[in-house]
Every structure is written in C-alpha cells, then in structure tokens.
Image (tube, rainbow, N blue to C red; front, side, top):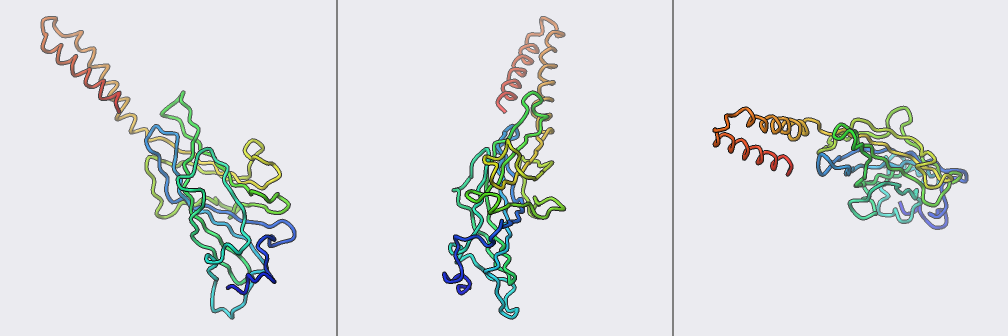
Length: 254
C-alpha cells in the first residue's frame, strides 16, 4: 500500500487529473429525529459516499485483493475538500467519522464518512400543524473551483439519496427528498461546484387531533353544559366548572 504513495511518484497536494476532477456523491440516510412534534429542527444522520478516480493509485497484485484499505494512510492522499452549507449545526465536532477509504485496482477511490447534522427547517405557521417543514443544505468544494473539481450526484438515473434498511425515524416523517445543483441563491460562490439537498417532512396529524383538537372541542362543549343546568344545582355546576378548568390546564401544559 505505501509504495503507491511514495513522494517520488505521488503528491497529495496535486489533484488526480490535469483537467477538472469528477467526484460522484451519494447519501444513505441512517436516522431521522425531531425533539417534538412542533419543532422545526430535525436531526439527520447519514453516510456520504464520494467516489473518484486517481490514475496514480492503480495497482496490479494479480487479483489477490479486490481493494486496498487506505484509512491508515488517508493523511497522505489527495481527497476532495468538501464542506457543508447548512442552516443549523453539527451535533458532534465538524470532523467526520471516517468509515471507509478503499482503493480499487483501476484507481477508483471510495471514501465513506458518517455525519450527524441538526438542520433548522422552514415551516408555515399560518397553516400549522398542517404545514410541511422544508429542510435544505448543500455540499460545496472549499478551495477548488469548477475548472479543478466538479461534484456530481450519483447515480444520475435515480435518487442519490437512499434510505438504509435499518432507517430509524422518531417524530420525523420524510415524504420527499430532492437533489440537484445549487442555484444562485443557494451557493455562496458561483465559481465553485455545489450540490443541493432538499428534504420535506410532514407532521403527525393524529397527535394534534388526539391532544389538541378533540380535547379542545370537548372542553368548549362541556363548558356550555352549565347554562342548561338548573340554577339550584350548585354541586353539578361546581363540578363542571372545576372539571373544565382542570381540562384546560392539562391541555395548555402539553
């Protein structure tokens, strides 16, 4: 493995191709989480795959290895300098969790990292809780412009955002995901390659019906019963008044 990265034949500061290098990107969702049903913050945990070719790393060991594990020497390799444009924060430090770095005989490199992001989404309070929070973030090259590095979603014929077979979702109901290239209003710098991610969630409407709407209807209806009671039925009027107040306090504290 180390002979591929000898300083005489390999310089990690030089990109693999003289012209623009192409990096294919895909995402696998692992966890979707929201702290409560009314929150506009969503926690998204995912694996990000980046694939590119580096002719300098081609090797032939007569088929003994299908790939080489390059994680121990990743500091000596050229890697895309991607970073995130997002409305939110990382749950953990900015450094990703390195999951895999594989070099294949034809010089193809697969880099997989795990990320955990807390995204601040956009909702519509005028139709709450029937709105659909929309979340956006983008991936962009830090220092290399389009003529040096191009980011591309892969595969191009289907959604590059895939759901893991063990996807866990808590108070986060994903109904749509879309990917593309950043528009003018999304990218910070037009001369750099940028990919966009658009996630749309829906709220658990049954929660609001069972904890807000139905109790509210019952509360208002029961509060009017006292008008039909006999004026001398003091215990009944007091019981309904106290019960209505307790129901009101319980409903507002949820």
